[in-house]
Image (cartoon, rainbow, N blue to C red):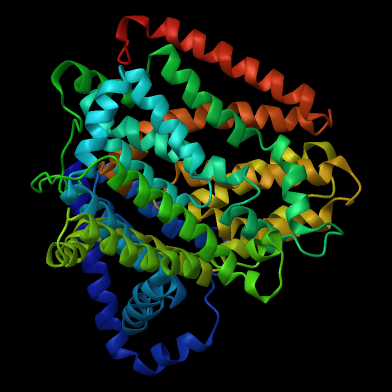
Length: 542
């Protein structure tokens, strides 16, 4: 398979060079192309770059080259295979703009990397591990503790992924929980809990996109929470899976290796994140971890509402609705980093020079995540230039009239496909929410059900996608190979998504979450018991 793939890539390279030679001979035609709209725009081919990247990543297990291949293919489509225009588009509109779009996230990642490095150098992580060893007695306890911490950090999914991973990784490692399982628990709580928490950056984003509905944006978000079947079912799924002590699919092998051989990774390719725990243990105590983390949470919360204008007279809810997480998160992180440095210096557990060394070390540890995020954002920019969103939105809007009660299920599927293809939930919100609110009567229960289907589908597709920023952050937080996380999580996401789809199909006719959700929960429970019986002889979660 790999030889075949290499041959295909060589042929693509030869074809690309040939196109370059052709463009040299037709310079005038090539110069005229950027002014004209590509014939690939707004068609099914607009989804091809994302599909190529995802397929190559799953086949080759190499995420960087796969994402780049998708960017190049998209550039070829945009410029209609003009060599120099393609190179210019890939570099400027793809990679350069991709870095610009995520500058705030990069700063936040680097600061979080430095933050984790400082905690480890002080010995606070070791102290927490020793405390957890006394109070967390089992593998089940370590996984449930990870889940609870993930639920408590509901303000933002990026912060959730990295903070939960850095704090809980020593605990789960000691209890022989595989990094793939840790990454799954982080990913399965980060976005879903933000999706049902009114005070979160996700609620703010949804509020911004839902203006003009006759409802306050936050009010509409709150009304939609009981119908967000995917998020609710995924949170319950994690708890049930842990308590039932079994895994299936690729995850079972990872967990079995962790339990029987102490092998937390199973596969350790080049993409595995650099570990930060190699530093010499310091004299830090439990307070040196708890206090900085609480300070970071408090400052991040204040930063989000500050950027939203709370000091300008806005209410907390309105400020959160108007915030920009890419500005607020690094804003709060910078202040937290300075204060924690001063705190550690006063405590005598970390010198100023050692603290400053943590900044480049934290940056190095986050380079793989930053590189993947840059390429994933570049791919999103390419698909946007090809009008992939408009293509899906057009077909969604023009097929809505005759669907009526089936529409929530259709919206869920479309949102999942769009989020999977583009790797982003928020862009899916921006595309589909205006369509949803213009389709339904604001006084109809279908308004809330349709909104929930849009939000739930976006999270489900985001979980499946290897180019999703939340999936990337979960891999980084758990320091797990990215594609290992994607492959082990996929069966779980597809199972919960299938049950959620059935729930939205029923909700389109029975406009009562009090009836639909218990039925969905019971179905999920029965499926899990059936799967446990099926895999009883292959139990990897004892």
